Image (cartoon, rainbow, N blue to C red; front, side, top):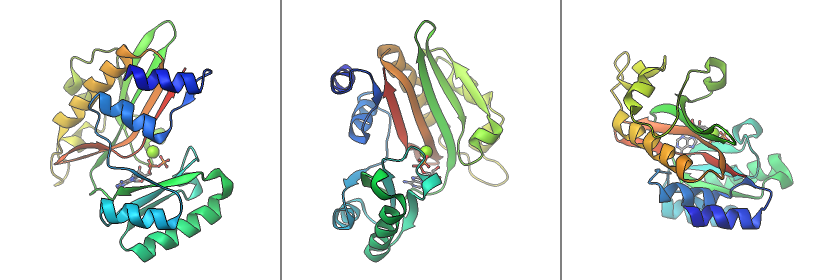
Length: 221
Ligand code: ADP
Ligand code: MG
């Protein structure tokens, strides 16, 4: 973990957002589960990546900060043709701001949550959990803890969206324990690495089978 951060700060002494690979490496040091992500430059590489990952896949632009706002996320692509077509459309629409792409497996639907963190210069680390999805900013349903996170279940139960996790109106209860585990791990990462100024897992998709992050960014300073 420290090595990844040190290397990133050496490359960008003034800090900044980590690359997708560095982000994945740092999170994996702390056992935070990211979905498989294969980098692909161009439709041919994307097709090869999809063959490895397995259809259906998701194609995402690398470069833009809010990918879906600019048409940089295409979900549930079922064939190589669909994927190639989506790649061309995406690179045409976004232009040179798109520096590459990643291919991920399309995960089954679940409860979308946000896990975040900050390290304030004087105050120190703070972990955030909240409701994810398109309405996240609108509803601002969030809970905070100073790590170590000793009561992740209590933290999640403070959220108004908590019933969604425990099985709401006929939908099954999801694997809340996995999400709690991820909160503890993010707390540890922030405590260990004060250079991590900002961290954002959005969303973590929680299903009956676990809690998997499909989009993550980390800023070092
Ligand atoms: P951004 O936040 O930059 O717009 P995301 O990677 O968060 O892009 O993707 C936007 C939305 O697409 C997510 O909130 C989620 O609903 C869906 N999504 C992204 N990746 C996957 C995936 N691998 N499987 C299923 N759904 C996904
Ligand atoms: Mg996102």
